[in-house]
Image 1: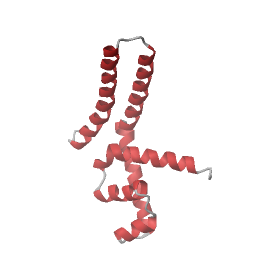
Image 2: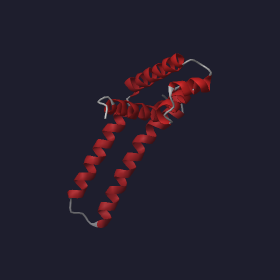
Image 3: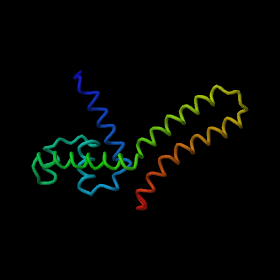
Length: 133
């Protein structure tokens, strides 16, 4: 296994997460190229053929779109907040599992944890889609 693979996997995962949060802020072409490259595993040549442009142009578009995603994250921090919320809800859930609670109390608290998870994701996505960000 190549030593670069974990870094490449980490980068791909991050770009996919950033795409989940900020794809509405990218142009249609940027969204499509990043989707082809990161989600559909197209090569630069395949994307170039699809758009009728050079591989270098595809590469440049990918780099610009990545920079745009990182800029949005630097300003809005939706991914960072999401990761913090996930870590805290996991910590909360682990703490709940150590408590001696009645079944109905445990279910009620578990429902609150699930609501926290869904609110975190939806709040950021809705703000982008309705244009308030």
